[in-house]
Image (cartoon, rainbow, N blue to C red; front, side, top):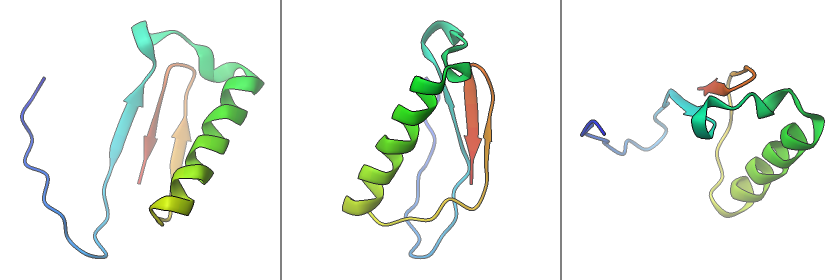
Length: 64
């Protein structure tokens, strides 16, 4: 895995990509999308953040 320098900047914006295990196209499934949505909401309660944009594809997603 690459060694990226991650710098915390209050109010900063971050772009990231998440890929499913073995690139399985599970994000086409309604249950998987609902689980992802619920997980994001749970984390937002503990660590408030905004999602400016999200692109959801069958085996990965990009988020700002």
